[in-house]
Length: 297
Ligand code: A2P
Image (cartoon, rainbow, N blue to C red; front, side, top):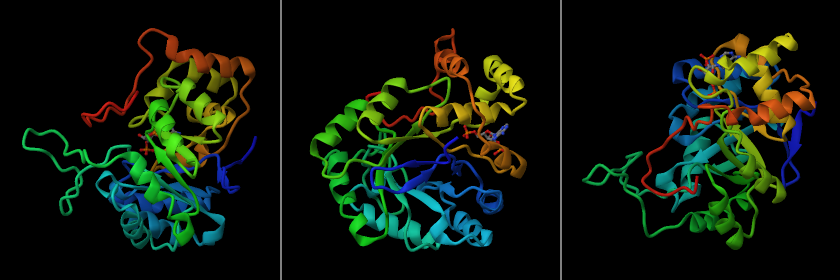
């Protein structure tokens, strides 16, 4: 199978990257180092994860030249009015001069109040910055590639209505859209839309997030058995064969090594996995942020 997809910038993005959300700071350095040493060339980070410095240490420890790696980070919601300032902090944390991909983490501008990550109103709701739009953030993002500090720019957690609004104003089409995506939430409509616009889809929580619940599914397990493979390889290969970049998270070296080994699924297996979400009680969104705004999901 293909090991990279092409972005609309012309750059290649490795089809499998290491996810680092929910990887503790004291474990993620080893995870990143062992991932790169076992062949990964793509690491997915974010400012809000709070452990970019530890991710950066793992990158350095791998000994692999920077030019061979693809590193992503994401600007947090309190930085919509100043995405470059968030990127500067991330670069400092990571110990890098540039990232290969910079995403807007959520299409939700939050007020900036000192170091508060999720400022709240008195009633406990999130302090949305109502005088600022994600489209305005994108206008600022569009200035960043010229600085050399991010080679490509994209979005995360964007729905079709949000993308339509963005595309109606954008000078640069987002390189990627990173969303929760796995066989219980295949995102068929969003994948089709993004692919028609040349936007590469990226899957976070491709195994179903903490504990990898999708790996317990009987269809996934039976396909794994037929290939003498691990269930994680089935769902990661399913994403890859749909043209979707997969970002499995693990801090376990043996799993990290297994997860990047793609297998070749048959058309029939692809179809069954595509339809799995239709089974009773299967369709589920595991990441349910309570932003208090309609995300168009
Ligand atoms: P751990 O990090 O302890 O190895 P997702 O990528 O969907 O967010 O899933 C991450 C979860 O899946 C974590 O709990 C991770 O555990 C677990 N996981 C990652 N790879 C595998 C694998 N190959 N087999 C079983 N569980 C896995």
